[in-house]
Image (cartoon, rainbow, N blue to C red; front, side, top):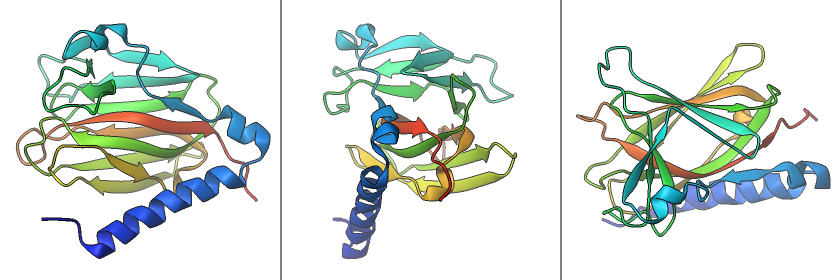
Length: 197
């Protein structure tokens, strides 16, 4: 079933919001924005998946894998390569490879950062998925957002509202692998914290 006109309008509005945010940044702020795209993971160029470990660091940011407390066999991050079926769209992606695992994004500088967008896809494209994001601010307050995916092959862009600016951490949760299947992620658009206006 194709997405409803309202869903398409909502996605377009979120994409426009991300572009407006980027356009409104000063030259220095925009120059510091980076995309974590995992293309530096060479093993994923020739394998469907490859083990990354529990920490991935690139371009001034760190992703940490945390297994669920009851996980007796934590796996860590897996890079998803071009040979993965269902296809990851020709791009290298990342997967927190355990049920109920969490991924935590931080700035290596320890300073606040702002997350603008990222791409999500169902790992096996076999069922809809909902990904929960929890942003923790420097004062300890939290903001939350759920991103429902459609259960079909292909990437879906998640654009974050301004509540996800000036974070200390961004955490998102892998599904329970039963009623909420696993997802992979790519193209995290992130930058240093945006000064309040």
